Image (cartoon, rainbow, N blue to C red; front, side, top):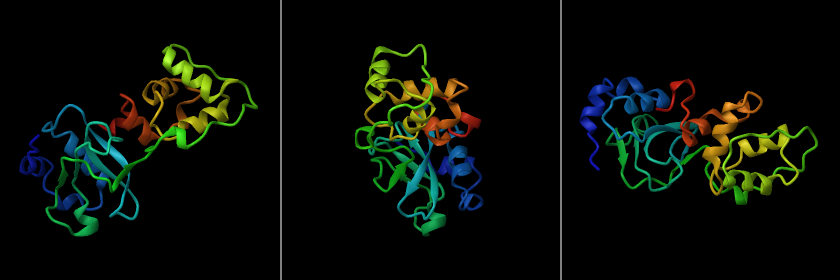
Length: 189
């Protein structure tokens, strides 16, 4: 996979204007039309940046081998080349929601009214039965919405939660933008 670095930099008007504006720069890179259809903005933590950070992924944001492009890392580290591209992924990048749910734990038993979602696959229903054998109340759904996304049908369940007015606000927006096919605020692809 060849990344047209010079064309990207030209289409976004250079890199200087994007210093420490990581999410805006990443979205501009995705919107150049020069990358694969699976390009999207990822957000989380980068070992070289002292705060939350955004970058571009070419595939699954949670796969450590997914190629990344970072147009603002230079503004935090003074590294060169300024448009950082790693086609093998990079372990210093950790998107919000990374990790395995099996290391996180189950929601507590419900104490409020059970909330059910319709239209889920058998796999998703089976997982929800295991996560909350007596069903999930608002608090249980909140725990699930903030759990790591690995090891469960997160895309399907979080998509259904996002479409449900009772539950949509529980999911961190960055997780919605990275896990699902939803594009909240047009900020991810």
